[in-house]
Every structure is written in structure tokens, then in C-alpha cells.
View 1 (cartoon, rainbow, N blue to C red):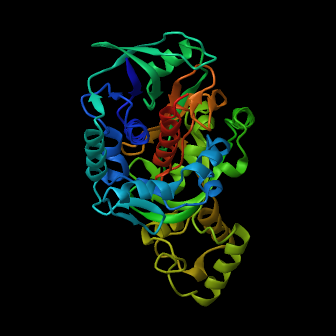
View 2 (tube, helix red, strand yellow):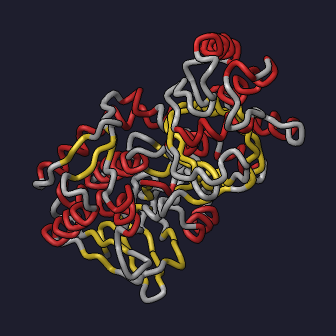
View 3 (tube, one colour):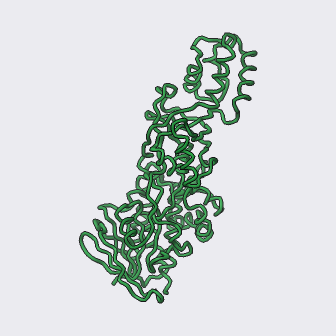
Length: 429
């Protein structure tokens, strides 16, 4: 019988296995991976650079980046935070760089650096990694739960393994969630998080690649007003969570960028309810509101009356976006400031501070597919990451109902949960 079976050869699985054996070298630990490769999500993360964590070192502030899990993660982050993650990699000779936006990458700018680190560590510590081991059954072998004398049988497509303790780090795997549900755990139905918005609109057609800072808000439309408000209440989402300010990127299919991705994370369940058909309102000049901008435009009109509007560098906006919004306001290429009506000026102010766009569908953000959903957080002891229902069953990573906005936060959840579970597993009961 093995001491510990780690289910899942991803970030959380490897991190936990390494810490278990480092804390208690006498334990025999095996990682089971369903695929022919391990650490596949690490490989593609951050565009292949691997955004290992984020430079937010205050546990409470760090937890605010998790639409699901904010309250539960404050305690764990006090035990193991971003600085501890950095220390882990730096101790193993990996230099890390903090970028201007707080994201942290290996100095090599290659995820292979992180993968090699994990593979070297498991090899050094004698941790066996069994690939092509898809799990088809998880069976508790019983025992006296009062003493924690409880073991497990894990059936794969090839073999059956027995272990005293198991750690589930299988990420967003529906088959594993179903097995856990059959054992009595509540599984919050998974829905996509971190996705981009599909939009077909003349105002953004032909200007893909344009990026600018903007304020974005998800708003109810006449079509879905009732359903929108019902979903807000159902998922206890605050209207403030559906507003975001940050870089917005116009793409071939619609809109992306950190500002959009943040909204997709906070609104994951609500937007799923709406079948990804909703309305967003964009202020392309977040420093202004509509009335204030109108006054500014009137001043420009007085000073620059003889200039054409299209060629006036009135605001810090990309030229192609400015031209598109000017056109959408009913202003032609050759119109001068002195020539346009008050109504056209009002339309321009509205377009710049309150453009409404109809979203019809979503697209996955690169290869970094993240889901909201998983094991109900009420059924996990966050001091140990052990199941409250079944002893010697632990969790780490995305298998539980925790997810974050983009920027290294999802990995930090994996590292923190894996470390705390590893400490608990390594301690003799």
C-alpha cells in the first residue's frame, strides 16, 4: 500500500507531491496522470512563459482577485502567499522577474523552466509519475474514521492502487467530479471563466489590434432585464463586480484584454445564465462622464473650429478608434468642428463615454481555459484542505470551486492549496 496517491499531474499535483516528500522523506508518494504528458497547462500558460504568481503580498488584497473563494482563501494566504512561491522557485535556482503590471515570470520567459524544475525535483525525491493512468474509480476502503484509519483504492484503466491518503488535483475534470459526487460531495456545476466576448459591430470592424484603457460595464438589456436581475440575486453578485477598468483589445471576433477577462471571471455564472447574450457599456475615456466630456468638446469646438474633427488629436485615443467613433456619431471625414450640430456633438460625447455593444457568444482565452465550479467550499477544511466528509481525502487546485482573474492568481491558488494539503498529509495523524 502506498502512503499517498496524488491524482493529477498538473501544477497542484506536482507541487503537493514535492512538499509532501520534503516534509516527510519516509512517505511513498505516486502521481497519477491521465494523459501522455504532464504539466500541460503549465506549458501553455502566459503564452508559453508561465505566469507563476502575482506580486501582491498582502493576503487580504490577494484574495480579492478570486470571484469564487475570496473569503475562504484569506486564511490559507496567511500561511502560504506569493512571496513563499517566489522563494520556492528561487531556492531551486530559478530567477523570477516582476513585470510592471505585477505578473511574475521566470527570467527565461519559458514555461519549460518551471516544468524542468518540477521534473528534476520529483526525480530527486524519488516520486514516481505514472502517465496514461486515467482514473475510473475512487473507492474508500473504510476504517475507523475516529482514528483517521481510512484508506483508498484508486482504479485506473490499467491497474488498481491502494493508498492511505489521496490528494485530488485533477483540475476541471468532469469524470472526477462525478466520482466525488457519488461519494457524497456537492459539486457546483462548472461554467467557463476567463473568456473573450464575441461582438459584431461596425464600430470595431476593421480596427482589430487596437488596444486602449477603458471602463467596461455589463448592463441588463430590454431583452434580458428580468433574467439579469434574477441571476444577480441568485449568485449574490454585486453590480460593482460587473464593472471593470483596464486594457481592452479589439479582436477579429470582438473584444479581449484584461478589462474584459476580469468581467468574464466575476460574471461567469451570470453570463452562463444569459447564454452569453448580453450588453456591455464602454467608456473609452474613463476620466470623463458624458456631461463633462460634452463641455470639453464644446471648448474644443470653439478653439479648433476650422480643423476637421477626424484629424484632431483631442484625446489620448488610438487614431483608428477615434475615427470609428466619430463616424458612428454621424460625423463625416471632412466635417469641421465649426460645422457640426449640437446633436452630433452630444452623440460624440455619448459614443466616447457610453458606447453600448451587444455580446453574442464567447471565445476561450488562448489555451488558458479556466472554469468556475467544482467541489463545494463548505465541504473543505481550509486549514488542511481535507474533505470534511471523508478522512484522508485532500484537494488542491481547480478541482474545488475557486477561480481567479488572469495574472498568475489561478496558479497561486494551486500552490497555496497544494502546500497546505502537503503539510497536513505529511503529519502523522
